[in-house]
Length: 353
Image (tube, rainbow, N blue to C red; front, side):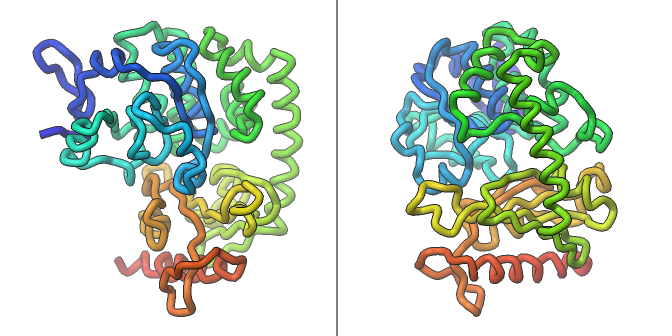
């Protein structure tokens, strides 16, 4: 039986999730698709140490679910920190809702796809543990502590608001700016230390922009955030802006136990914009050891591809009827309120469950 998060020795060979790690490094990986955030960036950098020069495409969970990266999917494609794609050859992840069952892992392997899943704070950590024995990742280790904290909800409010180089580098990463992402990836692959990268002109300029946007977002939150039953509901739809739970919960403070961020565009299908989606985060500054509710119940309520972690997850807005049933039609702005209402009904039952 394969156990998805078990790491052990099999006849002297290390395994993770029942997969022989030495065998993984011998795969013929020809391209990489990774999440367009700090975790995905470090995960991609680690794989580029193993498979030098292979092209990397940064994406987003909603784009994978929508089929935007289907043209990149072959048995030579590694998918990192993103939902599983049945046509890929290697899938590495840590999200709880993407945890494969032993039978799913065996079936994928029989079909030519290896799945490496571990209950780690970051996908980069899973990659680090997978390949540390086959390639030198000594310099990457300097990134890992903060990447784990940021992606795993373990960063303190003081660290989040600090000038820590990794915190600010993370805020510059945007999958839509491929030229910048590729340049930053190259620097990390070549061994650039965080404290050195922030002084490179092209990174320093992005950080300056990020700091200005950070201040703008802080002021914007006051006008687009509504706290209901200790849930901070943030409406960023149609604004072309994304943010994460740290900024929201750090700004709202002790008035919320969690936040719900709505982003994307109603006309995303025709214009190639982000689809209308929601992200859910526990207030990790207030609840350091876990939130008051498993937020994946909201992320998976209507979107079969929704999910993530209990304290950090997301999904697409779904077309709902007045009876809260998923309909086969395009999503409209009115569906946002229906989704929010249904999610808040579930949230309202948290104290009785």
